[in-house]
Image 1 (tube, helix red, strand yellow):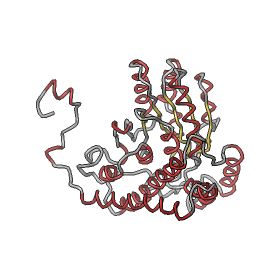
Image 2 (spheres, helix red, strand yellow):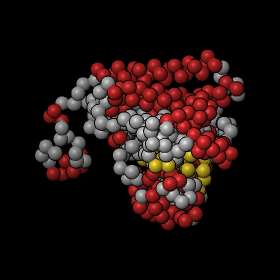
Image 3 (cartoon, one colour):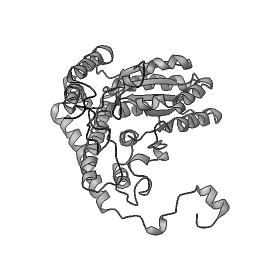
Image 4 (spheres, one colour):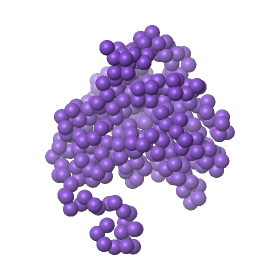
Length: 360
């Protein structure tokens, strides 16, 4: 039996607390048309199918290195990025596949990157935890906890200095909130009123450690008061709740009123990464969360019950996303490997290479 960091009774109690204090009704804001709501579901399905397949591909040695699935968090990335405008930016984490897809990323290029192929986003050199696509507004994923924070602040500072009307979302996990750079970044952004949104994806687990065992106050949003900025906790299983919070924070940021700290709380009911055997907890304690709070299930029920789409149409949207992922897998398997003579390419910026010449 695994070492139980949390009992079934404790898990059920946490679930009831979530329903009482955090859970919000799925109700689309009036500005989101039927097409927008179906697109939200499509992107959530795309993330679900992509990361469900990633684990199997990793087991079959098609994917090198480790990968961290975004399963269960689909509503956070999609809800948040739906509230952005073209030209806005995000920074990501080690769990970044969902962020790329939510920003409109190409799943073929993503899958190729995970398989180390030449036509991947980073030409096969970044892998799962280091996908970047500046043209899509994705400034990069990173395997170092908290390291996206100063990049997001820098992006927001650029917007302010250049008088540009864009905002930057800094996605980060609850485990990153006790890093020194987290506090430094919030402090600098708040002092300078920078147009950045700090979006904490609080899945209540920092790898094997329950968040409440790492922080005396388990409500991340409460920390905003120390920096004189708004802090809000939303239902991280609900794309409309996340959308509304980010929409309001972005509007505030564009007016020069500074950052907002948003805590999108959900629950990681899967392993931390593809090889996680979850020996730190009894995996049966995850089941109530998966059964009752799954964001794809909730969104599907909402679409049908609200009359947005009947079951056949919702199923067709999901099937289309699943097909797109399968096509991406076949594409990536057939894609060429990077040529050995490109091994040292792209180490330096084009500007540096042009200035100093040579084969850098």
